[in-house]
Figure (cartoon, rainbow, N blue to C red):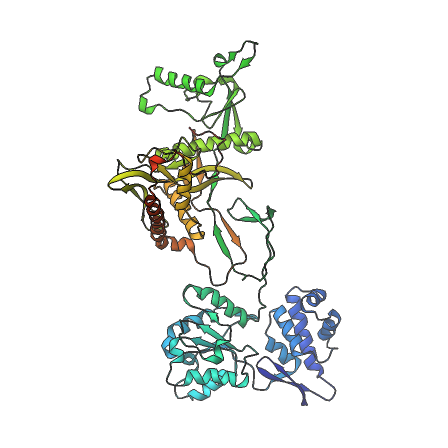
Length: 616
């Protein structure tokens, strides 16, 4: 037998060992058996392999039966990657023998001795991963060179028998006086000056003020700081010979019950991008808090017959809502209920019936005096909200519950703007509250006087529109932050010019600012208590998630991802300070123009929040 052909495959010259009449029958039989076993173990049919590798299923059959000749190394590599078996095993079975022997390591880490800690971490992370049914291997000098062995000889062997050479780029690497670091990457480029086989992989581990010209044109993998995980993923993909991922095109989507996006629910089309984005997971938070648990029942009953009035035409008409409230107050007073314990139950009127979350079967209930107890119906919530009109009544009752909940938390319920709440002053002084963005406490000024020449011109109060909406078959609490101008710290001013002033205080907000606001209002709704947000609704409760709904995209900007929730504790004071600074700059400019609150027609910004529901 003698070598009759050679192929250049990756970093090794592969010699074909054959006889005058081709491969030996024993060798082909071994290859065929190995290919067939690998295919069947992987659950592939011949046609499935053909589809994924573009290798004819007829030729594949001949390879497995030992009838085909000369399978190329390229073809064997495709099959090895599909079957998840070692490429070297197929080469050996096919009669190929690498001239310099098989690669013994997947990656050679060329590094400075001053960077041992990060190199050890990187090597450990790589060797904990699998490729082709085996663990990946890394060449690191301290694990390869024994006492008494030739250092140049072992380094040379490592460079020759490693599939890839990684240059761990740090200032220490390029400032090494020993010459070893330069010798290692020089040796790689000596045989492939332009790195066309991509055997040399630059790894940026620390900021490098200097990078040699011969390395600057190579695309590097960034392992600095919080980019380590993404950089490691990219490096492992190279070591496993994985193809570059392609971006997935998505359309506009609605939010599903789990707070994510339902791909099948489309509301818009996204344009085709001019350039492919990176295939990375991007999480975008929104200003919606999912309602996780609704009141179980809706109670309904006819209005008491003694409250029904008859008009001149003899038609029966239900009483006004104010009349029903008047009766409820009178009954509570007649029963001797102390004024501080009296309350108005939340209810809605629908035709001639009362709709509420209060238990109408309770004879001592707050609504017992205004209903006909013989007509009480208890309806399961899921059944009740199937009707769109009835669902709107439920949303209205939810909004009443939220209004009362925030009122008990000390916020002012704005009578001018539906669903708007704001923080009042603290006995004529600025008000600063303590809240928890994630784990650490933070301060935020929520009511502050604007003073000029020792005179209070007006107050700037932090507020929000907080309302329930129904979206994609689920209820959410929507939070729209805003500012309110008040005359005295607790009475909202009104007028068209005020809206324009508030707009100037606000600006475009990024993902972190959105998360900042929603977490702040989550903290207020929780009232300092643990667990989900619990809002009393009649005799029942709403339970609201404390984590905002979010969208997850399958693409974005590589190495630009941050765990915003974890960073929020540190970013919250910065965002609050920026917010104050922006407002102060606008106020200074406004005051220089002698624009004072007395000169404005009372008013405030309209955030576009619907006003068709009632809040009590």
